[in-house]
Image (tube, rainbow, N blue to C red; front, side, top):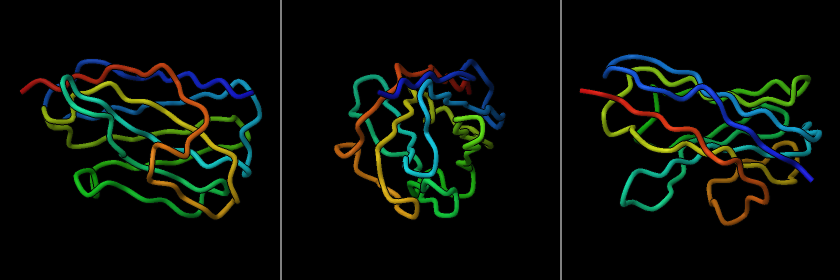
Length: 126
């Protein structure tokens, strides 16, 4: 069983930066693909970024390309989401997710993820 705990959310002005962290209680080595998703008020949860188990491959939603960077440090069982040039429309609850996968795979669909964190609030003021 894997438990995920997100941290690093908060209130930031437009144009600012935040780094989210997702710490796994169980072992999340290269056999786990990881992803970040977000849900804004009144909207469905949507894909943000994903990274392969070995950290080599990643994929991003178009609306965050060039602004957000996903990374992982398997030795610390932690995945990060560096968010730069934040916009008010980035305001949402951000969720970390994990699934057992081959080390090179990335997964965009939230339906395949097996484990989810409780989320961390990110609020971007204009």
